[in-house]
Each structure stands twice: as structure tokens, then as C-alpha cells.
Length: 308
Image (cartoon, rainbow, N blue to C red; front, side):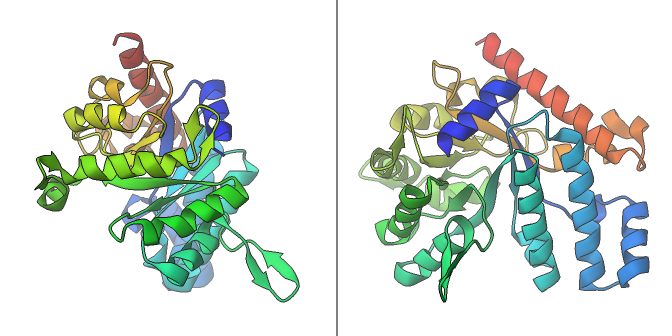
């Protein structure tokens, strides 16, 4: 699957992933009103609004980017209807030819971790049938429980040609409370990065591994170090734009081949219509605003890469 992602990045010339992290506050009134009219102000109505919003944005941007990253918590907040909207979103994005990174941040041990891996990347045996539960191409994974929590994901990745992105240095302000702690003179995130590199060596697919890493855009100097620590891993980079990450700071996340990283923007894209820069599109043309924001982001990152 990493080779599929690379091919799509090269085809679109866009090392960009759009985070499909819907909040009701991002969704234009006309979509919510229609959904609530049909289904009431219920969990089902909210999930329908999310689905219609996602679909419109995907229709507007699918030809510009290689991948999307739905964050499952934004769907889980609406219960079972929300999870159904998540599944519909995953399926629709794959139909449109997009690689889907399930931002699920799972992490447990033994059979529990294996069940998470099956749910999001694998197939489950039901009687004589093998069925696909959610069907993402990649999933994000928390490494806090060590190899016991990661190995079941590695097994599914090898069997299904799927991939994972392991949290190494996250973009949130308080990440340093644990991730920056020194252990034997090294910050914890660097030790995690070295372990990711070991796991990556077990799952190579060409020049890159099925095992990638999450390294936030808000810590470029740390990202520069981690790029060297994990040369075989693609880096998923959250924090661009709305969280303060700048394209010029991200060039060191990429390898000399111009590959090795994919940069995420969520509300900066899907809620672009609410930003002053794209306000002229208005609520009716919210998806066109998202398309314009994608074009601007791709241009920004590619210019930074050309100038490094």
C-alpha cells in the first residue's frame, strides 16, 4: 500500500492528505437543515449532515490529492449513526481512488490489538465468510504499550499489504510532558523513532516500509532529527496551517528523493469557507472553497521543496 500512496503522490504532485474531521460547526446551514428536516435533530440527522458534507468536499478535491484522513472520534461522537457515516466516507473515498488513512490512534495488547488491526485494516471471519469491517488503507497507532501492541498490526499489514503510522512526536502543545523526557540522555520521542525504524525493517515494500510515523509540523527541529532516525518510514505530518506549521519548516521531513512525507491539513481545508481568505465563496460554495485551499496548500509545499 505504501507503493500505491507513493504513486498517487507522484501522479498528483501533491504530498498532501486532507483530514476529514467534521464538526457540526463547520457544516453550512443548508446541509444541516436538510438533514434535520429529513431525520430530525437526532444522531441520525447529525450523521447524515456529516456524510453529505464529506461527500461534497471529496467530490471537489479527489483529483488534487492522493489521500484523505478521517478522524474517527469526530464520527464516534454521533454514536452508531456516526460510525456508519465514517464507513460510508471510507468506502466513498476509496471509490474515488483516494488512499484512506484511518486516524484511529489505537493501541492495546494481544487479542485486543489484533481485533483493532482486523477492524481497521484486515478481514474478520464470520462463519465461512471473510468480511471487511471498516477497510482503511492505513491506520494510526499509539506505541505506548510497546511491541505487544504493535506486532498484531504488523502481522495484518504484511498479510493485507496495508500500513500504519505510529505516533512518535505529536503536534499538540503538551506533547512534551512525556515525549520530550530524557532517557539515557535521549528524548523519548527519539527512542520511539528508533523502535519504529526497527519495526519498519520488518515490513519493507520497495524503498519504503509499510510502517510510517506521525511527527508534528509544529516541531520542525525534532522532525529534522527524526527524518534521519527513520529513513525507511514515511512521515505523516499533522499541524500544518491551522496549528501553526509552515511549509518552509517541513522540507526536512522529506528525503532527498522528494518523498518520505505527507502533510495533513484538516479544518484548514474542510472549513476553508469560514476563513477570511476564502469567504467570497460563501456557504453555498463551501466545497469550491475547500478545493481552492487545497490548491494553495499544494503550491505552498511544492514551492518550499523547490527552494530548499
